[in-house]
Image 1 (cartoon, helix red, strand yellow):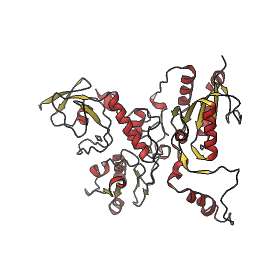
Image 2 (cartoon, protein in one colour):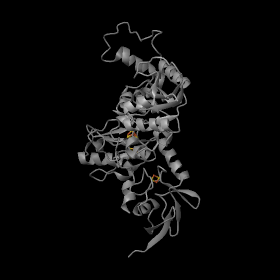
Image 3 (cartoon, protein in one colour):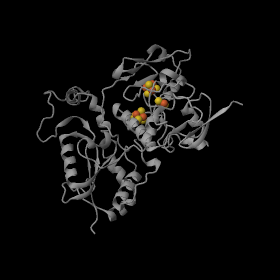
Length: 233
Length: 183
Ligand code: SF4
Ligand code: SF4
Ligand code: FES
């Protein structure tokens, strides 16, 4: 039996495998830490900063920090929850998120987090940046208005031949996701769906599909994001 | 004690939020007991006739008339509530925010497929009576101070009802998960 290490989150005693990151360990202990860029078993990127927790008075991203024996982690405290809400609000104002007309609405992780935190209005002014929609691929639409640059698509999606079809292009505030037009043309419908599902928001959308789940039956219509984790234990 | 007075308006919206207000079904009878309506499309009172307690704002600001009405509401209502995505963040009309206003007008009146042959003198509406379009669509709280926000497209009837009742009775507003939605 592998030896488990002991640590606490908000005073609750937890156990983890040695070397596990805090985010996965929290999940295994039935504690929800919000995350937008992390995917289990994929190398963490620390891109979204939503999983911030406090350890010995310092903010650390839970997805990139390995848990250590005796660690005392603060997670559900007002200071951190407000910081997370501020990040969510920033993501809403720095893109163009027209939820009522978005194919991902109801299944979107950013929107679901805003629901969980009961975001009524972002505290920041709306930026309304000018962004494009790239519909050049026959299978997928890339809507830069909604992309939060979490790199999930780059890190976790490969086509049937194991090739990356997503990459970053440009730099700084012009940074955007690029889709390989030729490779993406050969995607099966199933793989195209997989690409759409990897994206936490509605930035990767299947062509000629959408709005096929009635309101009330979508993933986050009735149950807050994270409630499946919290109910495990 | 006299009843609290409510006013409502639809700025750059589709009246969907007002429809959702009516969607409180038979509770509308209770509402009429609880409040008195002043300026509102519901009773067709066109101008404020007295100071109001609550103003409900649907729609964002896309033209000078919207700004005028919104400021009038701020002046005449103690509490202003933005309700619906358009009031909160511009909503679908704000899709034009990335497009220069000239391009929008040209497309709508000169070059669009449905107008291309019907405006030979190439006139853009310019009568003094017609409100001026703003450079972009603004959320209401970027024009005047807004006190509360009710998201949704439209906001669920239960959300509007619960919020109104909480305000009117002074009770704490507890929102069930299902009622706060952005679509
Ligand atoms: S990506 Fe999510 S937050 Fe953005 S518009 Fe779509 S549903 Fe709303
Ligand atoms: S397209 Fe989606 S998965 Fe890729 S970086 Fe943008 S938000 Fe993340
Ligand atoms: S989940 Fe940790 S930074 Fe995004």
